[in-house]
Image (cartoon, rainbow, N blue to C red; front, side):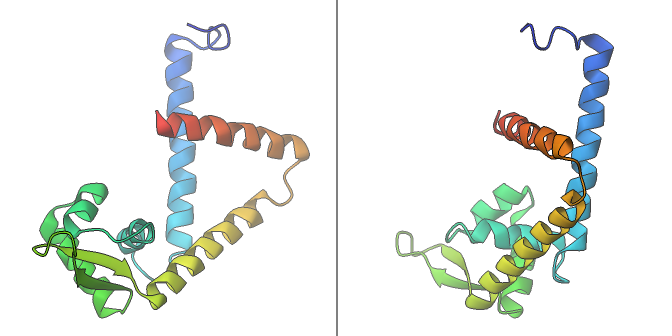
Length: 147
């Protein structure tokens, strides 16, 4: 055990873990539901995944941890709204690739801007000390998320 974590052991560490998890969930939920452009959060999540590049429906279903039929319904809805398009996979003609349309990219950009704006509004007015603490915490949380 490192010297830095020696002061948090047993019940105290469990309590910190619980408090941190809850705080992260609350912020995540607030950001997700307050800035989705009227598109359901599960569909926004798929759009965010597709913005990284063309993906197969199976890959998207695995990433989102849903069944392939559930992903097919989500993709059908996104395609009907003109947010994604399907094309044949040049490497495997049996599969389809999902890509963002221009409208889909605009929605993704708008949601990012809205979420950033929401967060900035909630950071404004915090003390420099709090902002510095959040900066340090962000780096730590990023490491935890990658573990």
